Amino acid sequence: MFRRTKTETAPPQPVEVKPGGKGRPTPSRKEAEAAARARAKGAPRNRKEQARADRLARAESSHKVRQAMKTGDERYYMPRDKGPVRRFVRDFVDCRFSFIELLIPLLLFSMILGYSGNPTLANLSSLVLLASIVVIVLDMVFLRIRLRRELARRFPGESTKGTTYYAITRALQMKFMRLPKAQVKIGQRLPDTYR
Image (tube, rainbow, N blue to C red; front, side, top):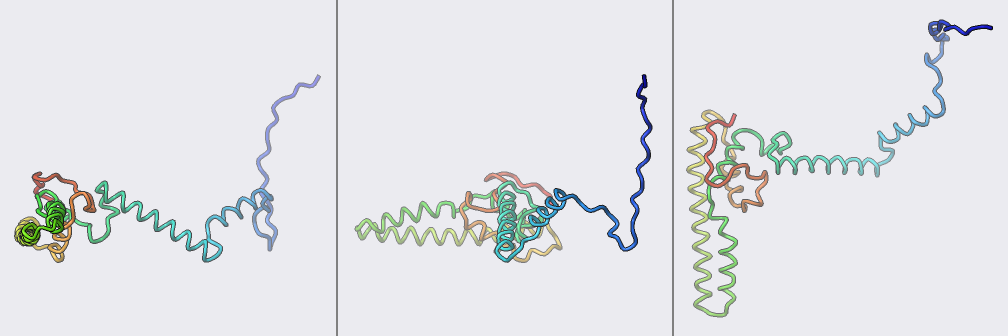
């Protein structure tokens, strides 16, 4: 009886390329359909699909920015929020108590007094409103003076253009509504370097 032995496999034969040929074997139907589906998924075929793809890309980008604003990841911040100077300004505003945080309760109190129907209470309401506005304006002036002094000390020679506006607009928001989210607590000591 013949016993089967291992036969040596022959090395693969090189594919002969005919002159003027495509230089590769013709793909099977299954391979061609898979390649066509992959191409169809990649490029939009009309304006409607292009608009949908753009919308999805914008949504993904804005989701990354929102997450970064909450977590403090500066890579995805908008350009107005990037850099060590802006990070210091945010921390400087966030670590101090601002009278703006009392504004909404004062406005509600003033509104209740104003609609009470009592002329004395209505006058008191306008006085409370005027006093709160004066206190907030003074708070913003002191914020600007202290911020300019700290920026000159911590970032000598760097441009601080627009930092006052950035700080005041941040300070005028309630702390829980600020974006990027506050990374420091009220009264917390700030680091000496922000580089």
